[in-house]
Length: 448
Image 1 (cartoon, rainbow, N blue to C red):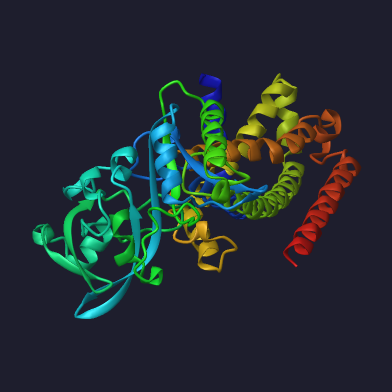
Image 2: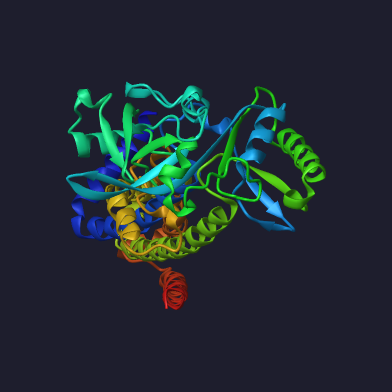
């Protein structure tokens, strides 16, 4: 440990004595590592990070309806009731349907509303910040419970966080709704890339959806309008739940052949993204990730070339250390520590750039709605990724120059202070330049 600390202090002194070299190397690495961390923060936000404010989200599953081999997503209300009441693999099954709402309070504002079943909040494990949330008693008869739960953000924006909002009537689509609660600050809904302003009972469908022309869909199996999600029972796997629910789908097909013929379903682990959205996101982010990996490789070859050039001026120093008894392994370790310090410094600077770069990507029009408004803040997963990438990057660009610089010709280096391996170094530097140009060409073609 003492030798390692000595090498670390020595490496710090050497790098601070060459501010020009250190600055260029750190900046190049910061761009490469920062770009990779920015893309990973998007992957983390869209595909890895669970929706906030939800209890044990890893136990939730989302339903996709399939008819004649084609995904149709939404379900009719009678089918929802049958799945909810017949399933033995789920602790509960809830449904919701997003819809625009017109809020009138002097001025007219368009809101993102969500029609939800009475067990929606309890199944998710969402807690209220104020008042109470929609319960099964609010979801009994069509039009019987004109109540609303506000999102925390809408509560602050429209009512300045006033506690007296509970019990107040607000006008939505020209109808009076009574505010009964405010959802927890962290919770904004069950769709990624979409934050809802408020929630109302699903039985208020006619009032919330004027396009239905006063007809409710609660007895219509052919009307697909609800998104379904459930919570797995303890010890039940996704595959077991899939088998259970496919069996119910087959029973419904036999009982209601006119509406349910050739209908089945598929379960997805987690909620917030449909299967085609997940594929679209993976393809888009995979393409971006491939591009920034090329950028990182270009940065690595660039810094490796700088280290080779720097090693040329240190041949006499290295030869003296070898002549005094230092082992080649000790020298390689010293050179690797210098590379790792550069890489960690570049990673630290890149991490500062990560939120800005990710936000810049989101500022452009995205091919999938799920990325819009995504929270790309740095969390523990992004920190761990950046640290691991920094260490790997340091080993990538520092190992070959360290191996090359640690085997000088002692006699010539000590006598003249110049390297005798110039041809080998020139060949290696030439290969690195060719690699850098090739990678840059591929990246430019991909960008084009």
